[in-house]
Length: 285
Image (cartoon, rainbow, N blue to C red):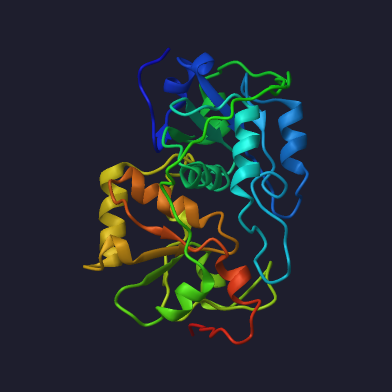
């Protein structure tokens, strides 16, 4: 068994040395073409990787008022991960084809279940392919009889809409919006019925965390950039959000990798927030 455990990012070189010791998940996704990720996975993927779908496996049932990617049932997600062979203490690695934008969601979800050794493949599938490492179209079988060990205690607890609303304008809360700047400003809204942002939110588009090759910026750079954005606001006040609670996890992961821990996720994010016309909306000129 490989002795090193990773809790934020792992390089393609590191992953290549420990494929047999990890549970590997391909979480690629396309918001505009929800079946494209699975089709790409079936064509070719990293050996031993299982596929989990952003909508079906990593989200719960939508009600029209709980956002586009509501949290799944903790029990059902835990059961799914156990069927892949995940047990407490075993390394979980997740990758995608979007710089970690979708893989980061499972990184957060695993921590929510109480599983700490979970890491995102830095640079995703492109980083693996750049090293000309093996690929396959073989789909691994899931376990017929999985472990029943519990992962807890939870390492993350999501913020609820009512909690965010109650703390608007308070120094005890700083909302950080991970969406593109034009969506944050309310100039365009390609996915949700209302444009704008949560009043008082700061904007940190998740792509800002990445280098041109799709890998995360070095930890000292990320740390400096986030501290410049946040000023003297305490980390415990930070609440990450995006469109549906997916790319917000990317900002949290980037902060975690930079040693800035203890922030929170508003899992419902903008798609939930704007579903209730009673909640305030802000636009920036």
